[in-house]
Length: 270
Image 1 (tube, rainbow, N blue to C red):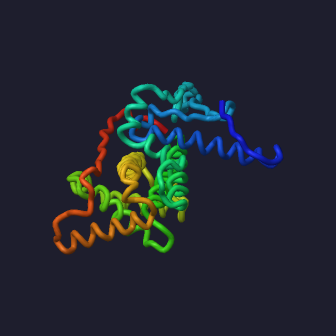
Image 2: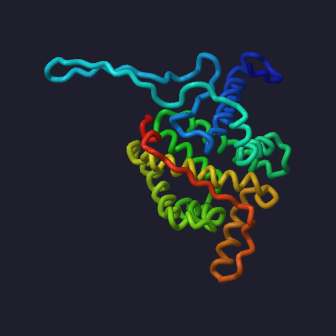
Image 3: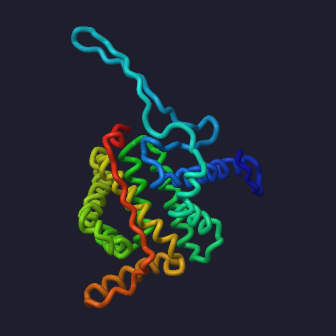
């Protein structure tokens, strides 16, 4: 049960209340990032709004032989907020993010708003049954976290991601810069050409992992990142340090890198 206190006429508040409820449920769904694989995720929703999680198809061949396979797909089941979930959130991301969104941590109003919007998008992505839609939500969330109006997004995404996680050997070994640039190109083909087949499941999972690494580091270091300008300045300082060949001092040693392994089961969805 959701309880919300608001003032105003009932009719005028209805749309606002429903929108707020959906956003809050999406933020809760965002807690699955890094914790659950996509074939294990749930889609929390208000009563009566849960998307169907199964389908039946009738196949008839040239000899009039027919089959009717049934299968489940996409997020299903309930979101379990158990001890395992809580322990993961304490260590990695979600509880720190909630403190920020509630206003318990001092950051700029614009930055709090962008982080909230990114969290909603991540949750919508986790609940989506479409690779293209989930991928696009992830890409918008990445742009909210790392870029601002006027930036050359295709260049700034890898540059600012590198500042946060480029210290890890996986940045080179797993070709992060190449994959980020490729993901952005696929995002552009999807948005500007309507090419919904452009993003693959591999692209989607890569953006999942990238968001986990970046968002976890941003919310764990709010003493450094109190605004989006701080993220930008941090990346410039890291780049300058690298250009000058100076001893690394800008990046805190507490930055983390998360790397997930995917198996055949993870590709049997959608």
